[in-house]
Image (cartoon, rainbow, N blue to C red; front, top):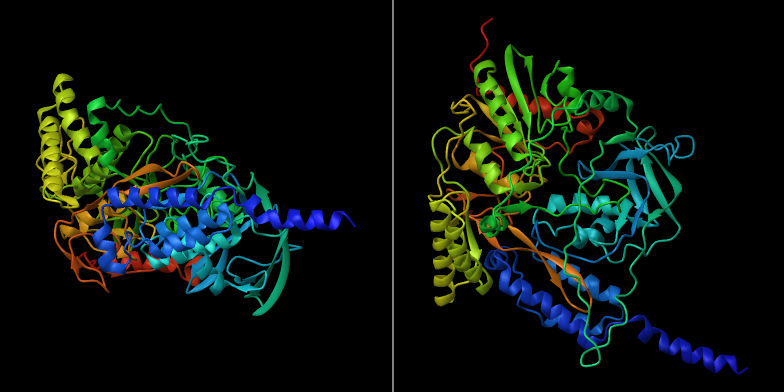
Length: 611
């Protein structure tokens, strides 16, 4: 009988024991997060105008923070606050290795969640006979449509593109990574899924065990407030690398056979990227245009990482046209490229999978060599930046300079003015001179220092446009090792999708703003400024990535639903020819319809073939 009052007392204490952070600590950390964005977030005014979200309006968020019962509740509020910016670059993450996967993935095709990846080693056909193209209807009794809404705030990085949001939310249904989704471990041992089988148009139910890796975070830890103790704080940012897996059954023998011929033969050693002088560090930070990628070693699946694939989704139809591979055989090839013939024309194709290649010197040499070959040997060219998650904006500008005759406005960014940037630029002027930096670098830093100083003195949030790749802001022609300008002047198209992002959008912007070629595909993601990681909260040890500026377009351009804008941040690059890969037909055929549409867009620029 004595145990009952004791048990009741322990139960009464349970909520307080679970919420390790105090209300004051959570408020302090949340306001730290707000302060980081208030001081550093470049597109603040744009997001206020576009979406009506004011990051300074903290009252409703603070009410949620104060009412939160657990540390996980608090993390969830921080994630949703940053996601409200709907910015492709910005996110709030926690330090967790927890990842749970059902060993199949899906995506949104024709508005439905269709299964496009199945791990048959984990889900044998005899027990789980659903197939590629079948529709996922529900998980644990919750309809997919409701799950997409539920997971939208966790669709890293709170993308401005609603299609991107839905597609990453779809991936979160079958894979729960806690670094992005604080409540990821709120699952049972199994998931009950309902699948609509296309073979008979009937629903079937399956029970699949969750495959769990890593440890879940349930608390930030007991942290006394000062003056009792000083909170610990991590000083590094999360480092992640993408892991790309082709869609289809795992293994998919047909795809595996083709991939075995690509990117598999050893090549010569890569040329190391030249060391970056100390005086160039601030400028290199300003050129970082890449979205966050998945965690190293933690993830079981690539479902949440649709970026950086070396091969296009329409690989098989491309090979059915007797695609002659030029780059792609060697492990040191930075691109997949080749030629094929159809309809009486010879076409070139080159895929740019990332704007942060393993070796930038080798990548530029390889790209220049392909451009010179295509200029002499093809009638039209397909440049593919679908699923390119970005990288170095100046690398993007250099690639574009080989496709756009003449000079054009290069990479120009308006920067959120801050004392840290003023100090960085003004102090680096002196050290750059002492270290023998080129004159344009010294002049550019002085220009940036003056621009930040003027913005601070005028009480303006952003500077004017700052050239990031050269002092003049104009592009420079690219010359190969023999002193020959590498330039392609014939008809071409650029393929994009909603996962074309950041520095890949910069590349697409150059092509569109200069009227060089039609952009073919769907609206890009809308990540339009450089991004830097910050620690966010000493008590909760969160991490956040913040967009520091906005990219200026060479000319205003209108995206449906918005006025003509001089920026693409938050709205993306709208294609000249709309062509969506995400259809059930393309899923079943590997992209036959999509490739056919792309070829039609390119062929329309060419003279008819004589009979």
